Length: 179
Image (cartoon, rainbow, N blue to C red; front, side):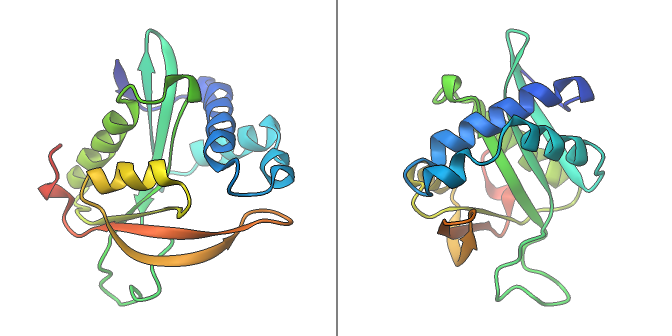
């Protein structure tokens, strides 16, 4: 198993994992019409943009020569309402972490999460947040296992008909995590 920076050749696989994992985790939380609305081309287009964005850090996990998951992270973009000061409380944010649904519960998410934290520490970003759907109990349990604290919530539109509430998890010092 290796953690690496994805290449342009990986976009199709990353887009496929992104779509499949999103459908798996969000089914029952948002309307099926909104969940199925975005085809693979939507995800490929997003990945093409992200690959050209130096502000978004990207890692993927490869096992047996095949990509099984990815994580996107960088400086905080979606601040909790209370965190608007000149010196923000949280310097980094995990934007997305998705694992191929056929490879859940094999430690891939943990490896990606820890690798991103190490990279953030190397970049002198030692506090972070991430937003997850409140009703996604599996992801909430995952972030709780790393000592994440629920620090905020917000309502987000998820399509033409759907909306959901997101919980924000925060870590004031990711150096304290076992990585």
